[in-house]
Structure formats: C-alpha cells, structure tokens
Amino acid sequence: MSDLVLYSLDGCPYCERVHDALDEHDIDYETKWVEGLHSKRNEVKRVSGQRAVPVIVDDDRGVTMAESSNIVEYVERTLAPRAEA
Image 1 (spheres, rainbow, N blue to C red):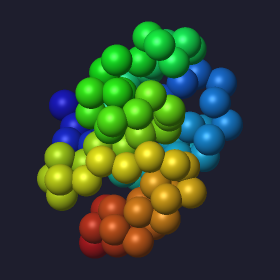
Image 2 (image 1 turned 45 degrees about the horizontal axis):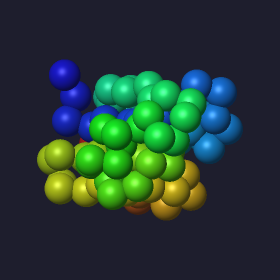
Image 3 (image 1 turned 135 degrees about the vertical axis):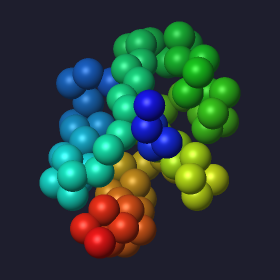
Image 4 (image 1 turned 180 degrees about the vertical axis):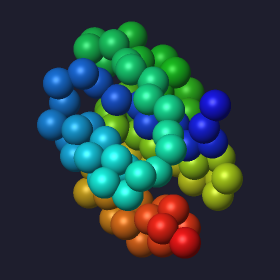
C-alpha cells in the first residue's frame, strides 16, 4: 500500500489532471474512488474537511491537499524530484 492516496471521481477532468501528473513522474500512489454524490463522500470529508475532489494525502510528509492546480504543483515541486532521484 502506498503512503500517497488520491481521492478521485471517475470522469472528473480535474482528477484526471492529477492522475496524469503522478503517472508522468512515475510516482506510486493509491487511488480511492469516491461516490458521485457529495453527500456520500464521508471519507473525503473525514481526511480533508471537505467533500470536493481531487484530494491527495501524503502520509510521509503529513500533507493533505485539495484543488488540482495545487496538487499538480506539489507533485512537480516536491514528489517528482524525489521520484526521479
């Protein structure tokens, strides 16, 4: 099991953007697929304080983050250099 978890919704373009960034840098992560209805996203709410996706949880660094643009920037600045080292 990976220390990096991405909460994602099938067909969500913002989630796909994050998946693409992680895959491009060959970063290991686990995807947790969420329900389409916001009211059913209790696990996302528990870990991030809100129900929107994507949300990434990096247990190694104690980081929980939402918003695809912020996550992609985090992947490229923080995770990618480590993965490529």
